[in-house]
Image 1 (cartoon, rainbow, N blue to C red):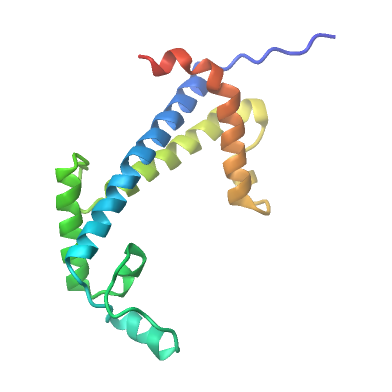
Image 2 (tube, rainbow, N blue to C red; image 1 turned 30 degrees about the horizontal axis):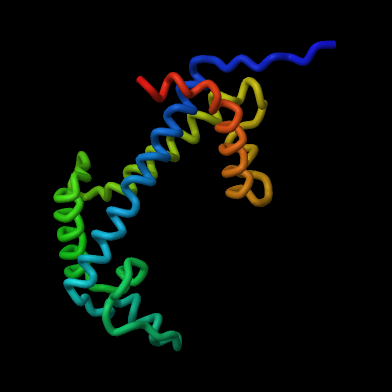
Length: 167
């Protein structure tokens, strides 16, 4: 008995191509956005002191006096955050990372494109795999399984992408 030959559809190849391009875009944008964010935090010393920061301190945890990394920006005042956001946006534009709406972050836009591309890939592969997004996310270790499933499908379809990426 002969082994069945896998023949991807145009939709599968297109979906995998979109994932590859979205992954490349995230990897391109991420270091620039992170560098810009840190540059703003290094230039402007935003004080940690909003209501959330006060609650954290009341609960016995400590916070730095000034926001020194992007993870602490949730503790700065609304006015300081608006300034931080404006300064980041300015640096993103200078770096060539423009977005459709000024309130958007180029990295979040890129990550959103990647999530949508992942969803399209899973949907395109469903006739072959019989696995839906809901099935993956209803199982234990959903994110780990999701990442493995995306990787497995990309490895399956990678040989068919060579010509499409050259266009």
